[in-house]
Image 1 (cartoon, one colour):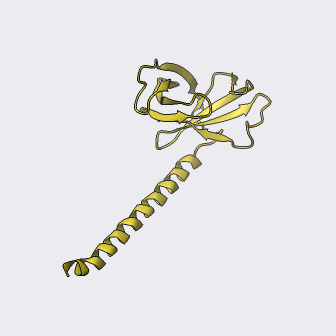
Image 2 (tube, one colour):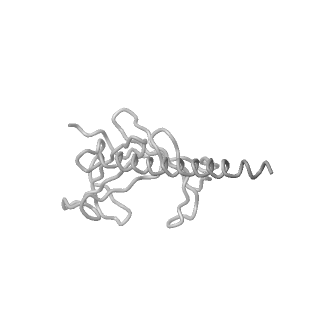
Image 3 (tube, rainbow, N blue to C red):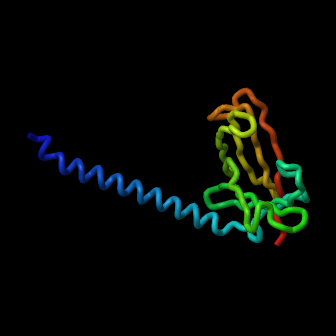
Length: 153
C-alpha cells in the first residue's frame, strides 16, 4: 500500500533527474561549440617552425589553438597556400594540456595510446606513448615532440 503512495513521487523524481541530465549534456555541447568557435587558422596561438610532413608525406604548415577545455585543435595549410582538406579544416587532437588521455588506435596500430600536451616556455610539446594501456604508458617508453612555437603577433 505504501508503495502506491510513493510511486507517483518516484516517477516524478526520476523524470526530473533525467531531464536535468539531458539539459546538462546539451549545455556542455553548446559550451564545446563556443570554445571551438574561437579557434581558427588566423587565431591559432602556435605554429610549426616550418613545413612538416603529414601522414601522407605532403608538406604542410601547422597551427595549433588551445581551447578553454584544454584541448588542442590543429589546422593545416598546404605548401601552395590552400587549406589542407578544404577551407577551415581542423582536427581536435587526443589528449589535454596538462593531462593525458588514453585512446585506442584501431586504424594504425590496434593498440592503446596515451597523449598529453604541455606548454613549456614558448613551445607546445606533445608527450605520447604507444603500446600503452587505457590508464598510463605501462611498460612503453614515452616520447617528447615539440609541435610548435608561440606565434608572434
